[in-house]
Length: 418
Image (cartoon, rainbow, N blue to C red; front, side):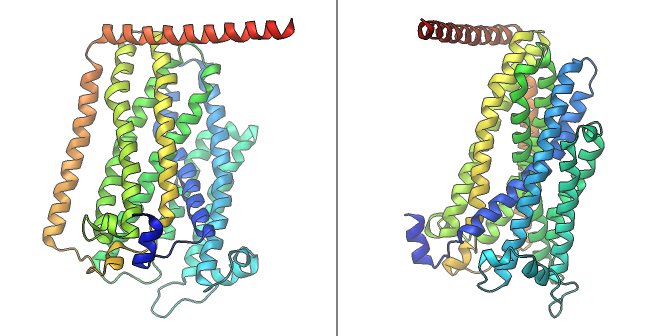
């Protein structure tokens, strides 16, 4: 059954193009700012500060990180402005998106009085959010300046809480929640957003940093092994948070398995679930296959194979995860409404048994992630010699392939010159 047929049969309203673009762009901006700053604080900065790293490698990665963060600030600023205009258009009851972009309409929206029963005006809350967008963006954009790059640590660590506050403040309700159900919705929604943006944004920044391999020394493999190891732990936490919060939101909006293909919301959610699971599978390949081989090559002091694994094999899988992550962000704007509403199902109300089942699932998920990490470490301690030999063989094959390609190119050039 196609999305068009589902939409026609269930009364689903496809969001307008400007809504799709602004919401996707906003989450890309959040992923760039939150993901990059959190990954810098938890992964890149500690790895670069470890003793034994080549100074040149550290300088290359710091410069590339600063440039990435600066561009992340630009994307956050632009996407934040269009997201705000989108809010104005939705509040304007049929206002064209082009009109919502004007400062006058934005000003009217931000200064509108509070609704009856609200503790604060909704526009004021969004005003605070966009002040935070401007502050976080300005802090990151400053890294375009060579002088500011010397203060990379201070600026990145300053932008991190500001970027997090952008999404947290936007979730503050203008009307105080009347029950725990609403509080859980807000809490799990923000857990989902923050963990998802850290996961996708972190993968993107490390994939971008890996493109510097041509400027790095032969000993950079050890540095990158540390980078991948640190981020693997961050990613495991994010996966657990995404799956846990996703279970709650799926239960709230989908009344049964059948609604995943009989309603438009459910079908879009099913697409998102498949994409997220594909990311998990790709991450599992890294965790159970590449990370153990990297650990084994590092213990065997196999420099060539370590460089090959960390800067050739690993980034290929990460780029696949980034692509899947971007697809997830593109699907999010289509998750409008609820499968329960489309199917005429009853509203989901949490009770003691549901909460108990949820806690059991969370504990099971946490245990499985812990076992995953331990199993990956155990695999890394086995077969050091064989793994290093295999990795060296792979590296030799790639070197021969590159040499043959260069020779073919040289002969073609000579022939053209003749």
